[in-house]
Image (tube, rainbow, N blue to C red):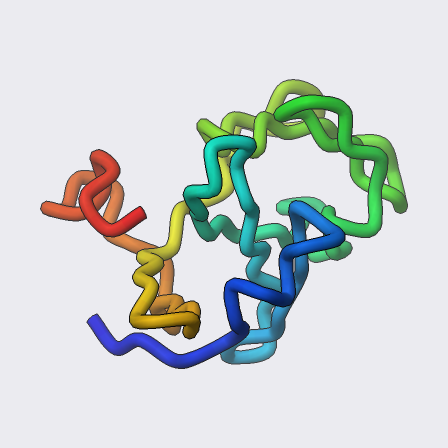
Length: 116
């Protein structure tokens, strides 16, 4: 998988989520309370609205355009469709955060948490 640098760890001192465009699609990088990170698609499956602009409560986000809801940890759509958000691989080298250009395969070797 090809990784690209998107941020620095220090970019998350005042926030726990940031959105980046990779291959014209929004990808969110999330900082967990324990200091770990993960990356997830954040384009709503309805009309590709950036979900990081919606209301985030815990792990649940509500799309700012039409109200679809997703679990940001599992990717499951809770209200709207059966399509899931997919994880991206993420790795940290020094202070740099790298994310895979494309989502991880659903049942690939890193899909169970290996690179997050």
